[in-house]
Image (cartoon, rainbow, N blue to C red):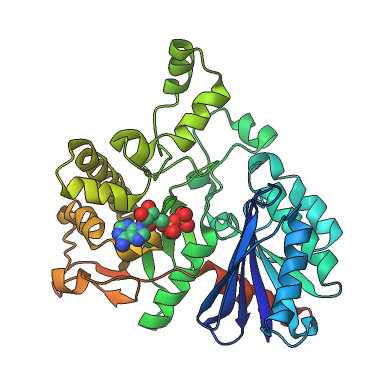
Length: 396
Ligand code: ADP
C-alpha cells in the first residue's frame, strides 16, 4: 500500500513515499523556496536525483508538480495507487495526543494551536489543504510532534509560575520531537523484545531534545513550552535564566521579539563557537584546536549529560540510553564526550563499538551499568505507519 509522508514548512515541502509494510522509501524529495522566484525541487528515485527549477507559487503548485512527476517518472502508475497521506504537524496542544484523521473540522481545531507554533503549524496545515485538493477522497492523517509527550504527569509538565498562566493561557511544557522519540523507543523495545523498558532517548540533531520514557509513557522531556528549552542546540540556547531577556533588551535596545530571535537563531553552537551552527564544522574546528569550538563542544556535551543524569534519576535507573538524529547517529566523538560526563552512573562505551555511523548498534561496554545504543530515527516512516493504521481503523 503506497502512503505519502509529508513535512510542509513555510517555504518548503518534504515528501517520502512508502510502500508499506516495506520500510525502505520508494522515493523522496524536497520542494524549496516555495513562493520565491528561484524555487526548485529535487526528487530521489531509483538511485537517481532529479532537480527541476520551477516557479512554485504556493504549496498547492508544489503538490501539483509532485503529483504530475510521480506519474511521469513512473513512480506510480496512477495517482489512485496513493492510498493515504500522513502529515507532520508541530503542535496539537494538549488536545491532540494521538494521530488524527484530518477534515475541515479537525483543521479548524488544530488552528487554535497556531499561536503556540506560529512558524510551523500554519505551514503544516497549508500542506494538508494542498493534498486534500490534489487527492480528493484520500485519507489525510495528522501526526503531532507534541502528541507523544502528552502522557506526562502534571508535576512534570507544569512550570512553577502562577497557576493561572496554565489555566488561562496554556503555559506548560508540551515537548517536541515526539514522533522521533516514539519511533526510537518502539524500535529499541522491538530489538530487545521488551515492551516495558525504561529508556532515555537522545535526539541530537540541529534541534536537540531528550526524553525519559517508562513502559511507553513519557515521564519528562527537555524541550518545553517551545523548542527553545532544554539542552544547547545548533542555534538555540536551551535552558537559561529568563531574566536575561529583559536585561539584554534594556542593554541593547532590542525588542523582546528580537532577543527571542537571537536565542533561537544566534545562540547554541553558533553563539558560542562563532563559527557555525553545524556540529561538523564545530567538530572540525575543535580538532584543529580552536578554543571557542572546544568550549562549545564541552558545553554541549555537559548539558546533554546533565539531562541523562536527571532522567536516570527520574526513571529510577534506566535500562538503555539511545542516541539518534544527525549528531547522535553520526558523531562517535560527541557520544563519547557525553558518556564520559556520566561516568558516576557507571555508564561506559566500548570505543570500537562506538565507531559506528548511521546504523543500529549497541555501543556500551560489557561492564556498563546502562546499555547504550545508536539507533537511526525515521519519523517519516512512523507517520506513514500511523496513517495506514488509522486508515485500517476507519475501515477505509
Ligand atoms: P535537523 O533534522 O534537526 O535539522 P539533523 O538530525 O539532520 O537535524 O542533524 C543535523 C546535525 O547533524 C548537524 O549539526 C550536522 O552537523 C550533524 N551531523 C551530521 N553528520 C555528522 C557527522 N558525521 N559528524 C558530526 N555531526 C554530524
